[in-house]
Amino acid sequence: MEETVRGILASRTVRLEPVSESFHIYGFRCLGIAEKLLDFDDKGISPVYIWHVQDDILPISKNEIERWSIDAPGDRHWILSERYFSEDIFQDISKDITINAWGPEKLSRWIGEAVLRGDLIVKSNNQTSNKSIINLNESVDDSTPYQNITLKPLIRVNDWLDSESLSMLNTLPVLINVKLWEVSALMSGPNSITETKEWSFIEDPWSSKIYEFNFDEILANSPDLRKIEPFVEKWHTIDKLKINLKPLLDYRKKEQFYDGADKVKSSMLEWWRADLDSLNLNSFFVQIPAWILIFEDGEKKILHSRNGKTYDFQN
Image (cartoon, rainbow, N blue to C red; front, side):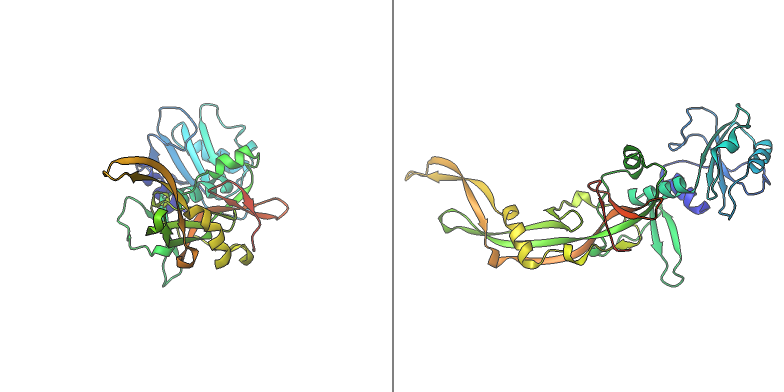
């Protein structure tokens, strides 16, 4: 976790200065001092001490926080805790100390957002099956297979949760599978003129939509997260795909007509229509960032990062 936090801060150009002395505070590890933090809510000007609390069975107690506050230097602190805690444990802390404390839900959401933004890359080691966090400032192998493309998220999970009054909900970042279709077809225009045209489309079975794909939508580095499949019946058959593609392929283009002296006589918008029998279709699985929403009653939903809608899925 310490490596993860350092990776996120480094990707956001935050430099952690080492502390001048070691602090032996049980359960609290000082990662360093930062002059300015984008993720820190306070507007103060003094440096921020960043602390990490490792996971444990028991939540942080009031006595632990009081002991920490006695030994901790400085007046501004950011505590990133993998252990749960109650907000009332900070009530008796000196008002001269500013504390921004994140529990495991907010911490995991922050890390998940960083992965999906592309600030961090999570890669798997095939030999050990361990996952490591890589800072984008380091060199990264860019020989990513075409089918491992991930599209950029269009919503922020924190903003969505706040708008739905679900800020305390547990979330888990994942990827959901969609298809990228490469399409070519013979187009027939006025006076029996023909030409071949190519397109790229995304088939999104979650939203039951097909839309044109733009390479600007690609996330710079695809995270290695669990991939979730839609229900099988949500995928289009080839026949249904052709029917749904037809209105997206046909287009109108301005054509000029000439008189006998090679002068333009008129201009008209003429239809160019795709010959469905000539369609050539190739597909690749690509991914869209998403989150599993875990409700208090155990129910789970998929939050789609492109349209902000939730969907059922197979656990």
